[in-house]
Length: 224
Image (tube, rainbow, N blue to C red; front, side):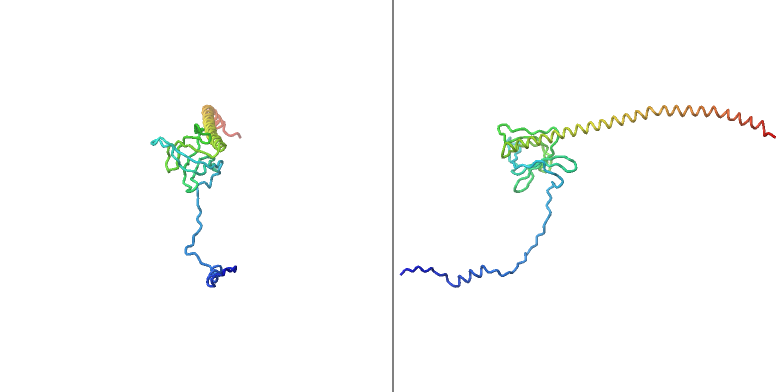
């Protein structure tokens, strides 16, 4: 005959379940104690003026095709002391450096033909530990991000040109000032020499007159 009463679990199973939920309060010390280690990225003395997620490619001349360098975050970093700006990109998962180079005068970034979300530029890159001439292509998630990157990159390159021109102008002004000072000293030297010669001749003329006066004084003798 069927019954509606719920089936009961065996007593030993219930006790086992209760024991599993019971907190004994015991603390187990770790076998190995790990200490915190300060991780440096080399970006501690720099401020990010641009920070965008993207995917980077480099052109392989031998294979004649684009090859992916990695997906991550591209940054334009400005040094707090020197003011120099470099481009750095790391892979999002491994943090491996994909690109690492300064943005210098004469550099420019242009839109990649046929894709408004991508742009290309040439650079002397140091990502692999040695300087290499690279042709990069970077792709963003939106047209707006691509335009922001291009605008900031080109602004930095143009500002480097202005800095170089200002430095050249300052160096030129310093040279002109130095030449002017040297010319002034050269002009002053003959005047001083001429003055010294005139004084020497006058001194020679005064010596015989002074000697004659001393002789007259000796001949006259003391008055009584």
